[in-house]
Image (cartoon, rainbow, N blue to C red):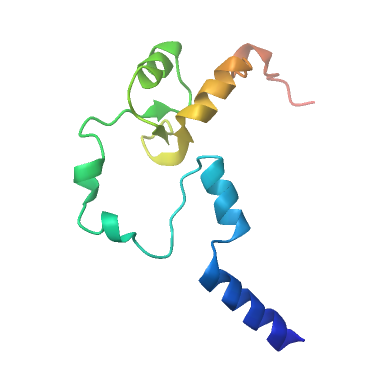
Length: 114
């Protein structure tokens, strides 16, 4: 039984992409494939990526969000207060956060530890 499961899984991966990878692609989430596609093997990151990085601070103002949304970039690195990358924010997710008005509001935080 175990051998059948391993053989069927191996054959399935050879024949078609996994359902999980297809779902990620459909939702437009970036992910790394096991192999570089043949058409992309000649390119470097400098050929594809913009020379002018647009990063979003983890605690951001609307001016930096507006700058990001007005760009042609599709995703933005998120930087903490020390300037280290802590994540990647796709433009579609950023638009959805703004659409649903999901903002960080420091005035709603309680400073008492009761």
